[in-house]
Image (cartoon, rainbow, N blue to C red; front, side, top):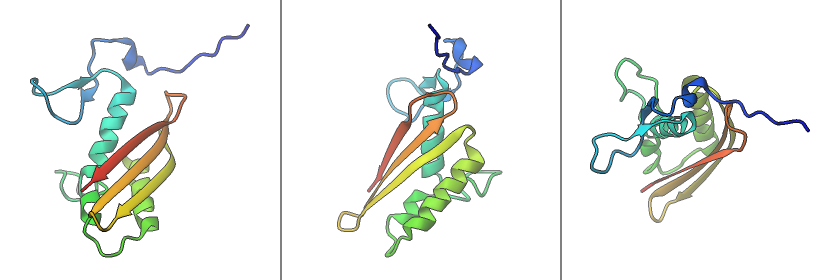
Length: 133
């Protein structure tokens, strides 16, 4: 019987080696550390979505800047989706965008984004949901 091998990043083989910082920053510790690549990719995506262009030093084009869309009178969903796609393609390695679902509630000034993606080292699709109010 054939066995299906799941690819794994070499850094995930060492359970004591931290890859990056987890979001959000909370709890008794100053920082929580991610030990798995898929968790760090999710944290990187959150950082990419919530950072506004010009906010990051030495990289003025980094970030989707979702907060600026929150109080816009008209949001071009196609433009926002292409901005997200372009930023992910440029700054997050190994991600394939499968679906970007935007839900704008003008009465409550809230924007809900459901981002479905696949990661080269993970078989099943991952989902990230961000709500801004």
